[in-house]
Amino acid sequence: MVDKRQYLRTPIACRIKIVHAELGEMLVKTRDLSDGGVFVLLDPEQAPPIGSFVTGQIQGLVEDAPIVEMEVVRAEPDGIGLRFVTQD
Image: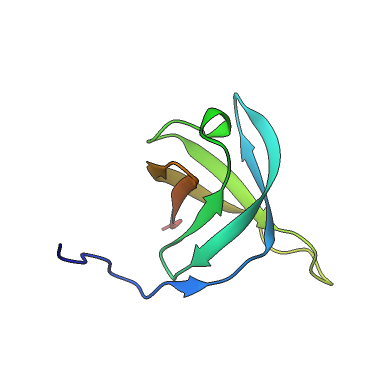
């Protein structure tokens, strides 16, 4: 299988608050992070649908992290892949 990833993924576990318009707010953990997005661990029944948008904010830092918009781009049994949405 050919790896088509554009960005190098870095394994990292931290808490992130995800907010979805219909599903509300959830506090989950990350599995990995890249310049293009993040993979978060959650149960499939909690997962927003592919193509939907969420906001996310890393938790537990000394200062408040920025809130970023992300799109759900893939789902796996242990979580979802989120792509950072750039504001042009």
